[in-house]
Image 1 (cartoon, helix red, strand yellow):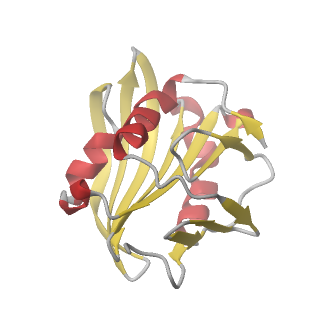
Image 2: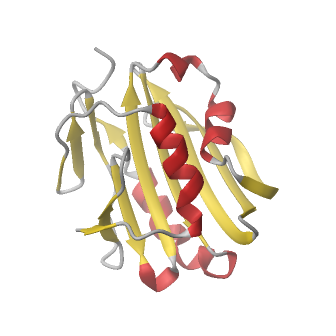
Length: 177
């Protein structure tokens, strides 16, 4: 695992996560299972090109250097803004972006709940980026899954991210205390 070294696609995500807070518990990630305090979930397969990186205030983060893409998964429980509607929570993740062009947006079934799924193109600091975002609320927690890449490289990794997201499931014991 390596430390995150920056990149335009991460700025709004990291800021939103910092604003959301963190439970400070020890994190473990093994064989696709993440655990930290009252957050526990499984994710789908991670391609070999995805390297796990550390990002402050994020549950999981990966970098796919070959596709210039970043992947983020975050879970938080028991926050006072968790009653916010899913589209508004999605907008929190996209803070700082401009010229948003929505490719697809809607509510979908996701881990026995509903998630707001958004695919869009937007600029961040004038740099065009493409995003695939899932936001779900379950058992007093909010979960975000985000894939971001330059538009010309986005489709190269989109299927890998879709498989990864399709494998997302919360685990017993996960939820607000």
